Image 1 (tube, rainbow, N blue to C red):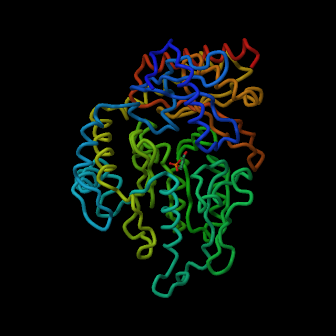
Image 2 (cartoon, rainbow, N blue to C red):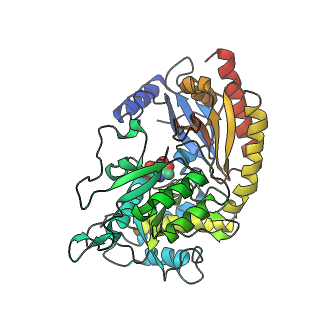
Image 3 (tube, rainbow, N blue to C red):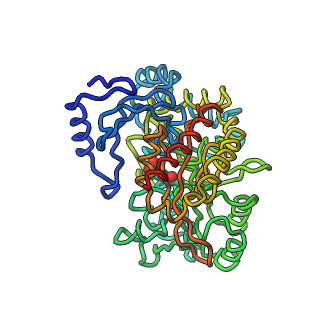
Length: 464
Ligand SMILES: Cc1ncc(COP(=O)(O)O)c(C=O)c1O
C-alpha cells in the first residue's frame, strides 16, 4: 500500500484493508474506537484516514497534540534514534543475569557520579530496574512495598509491621490495568468483579482513598491512620482524573508525613515523566521531593518502544527470582533511552516546556474555553501536560467532538475525569488532554490551539 499525500484518496481496496486490519485488533473501547487510521507520520504530523463517512479514504494532515497516550516525546521518526537502534542491536540481547555495556552506559549516565539524575537518585542509595510498560513498573513498585514488610527468612510478616496493612491511594487515580493494580483504582467501573487484595490475616491488605490535592484531609488521615499505613502511591499530577495539579506544598508535605510515619512513598511518574518542565514532577522550588520508589514510563521509550523504569532505594528488593523479567533493561531499550534522554537534555526541550506550556494554557483559556463556555470549563496543567475539563454537555457528545477535531487537523485524547469524589468535593468531568510531543515549538502550539478552536466550532455548528 502506498498512501497518497494529504488531500489524496486511498484506493478502495486499501481502505477495506485498513478497516479489516482495525477489526482484527481487540477493541478495548466498548465499540467506541475512533474510525480513523494513521498511515504515515513524521515529527508532529500524522497522515490520518477516516474509515467511514463521506470522507472515508481521504488522507488528512493531522497535528499530534497527544503523543500517543503522551508517550512520543520526540514525535515520529526522530533522527536521533536511528544510530541508537543500530548500536542497541549490535550490543546484544543479554538479560539481567549478565551485565551489559549498553546498560552500563545508560545507568552510569543517569545515576553514576555526576550523572544526570544523581542529585536526586545517587547510585549509592538507589538502584533501578526496567519493565515493559507503566503497569508492570507499578506492579514492581507495589511488590517492593509489600516485600518491605516481609521477613524472607521466616516467610512471614516482619515483626513490628503487623499493624501496617493499608496502602493509601487517591480518588480518580490510574496506575495501570493489570491485576495487582486494580485495588488501587477507586472507580467502580475499573474494579467490579476483578481481583481484590488478600483479605486473610496475616497478609491481608486494604487500600484507603483520599481526594487528591486536599491538604487538610491528608493531615487528618495521617494523624488518625498513619501508624496503619505501609505505603502511599501518588501521581504528582493526576492524569486520568483530569490533569489535576495539587496546590503548592502538597507533595512535599506528603513526603514529610510519610517520613514522619515511616511509610514508603511511591511516585507514579509514568505519565508526568519529562512533561512538566522538569524530568520529574516530584519537584518544587526547594528542589527534589524525596521518594522511596519512583516509576517512570511512556516518554522514556521515546515513542519507539514501550518501557518503564523503577528507581528504588537500595534496601528495597524482591525475594530471589520473584521479579525476574525477560525485559529488564535490554541493550536495545537502553540505547534508545540514552540517545533520547541525551537529546532532550542537550536541546533543553524539557526546560522550555515550562514557559511554552504556560503560554499554551493562556491561549487555550482565551481562544477555547472563553469562546465555548457551554462546552469547556477549566484549563489545568504544567509544562506540556495540560487538560481542559469539559462540561456535562460536551461529555455527552465526546465522540462527535473528537471526530470534528480530527477533521480540523488536530489529534487530542480524553481523560475519564475523577467523577464523584468524597467529602462533598465537586464532580470532575472528563478532560481533553493536550500533551504534545516536546519537539512542538511555539508556532506548533499556536496552530494546535487554532485547530482545536476550529474543530469545536464545527462541532457546535453541526449540532454534534
Ligand atoms: C499515571 C499512569 N500510571 C501508569 C500507567 C500505565 O502505563 P502503561 O499503559 O504503559 O501500562 C499509565 C497509563 O496511562 C498512567 O497514566
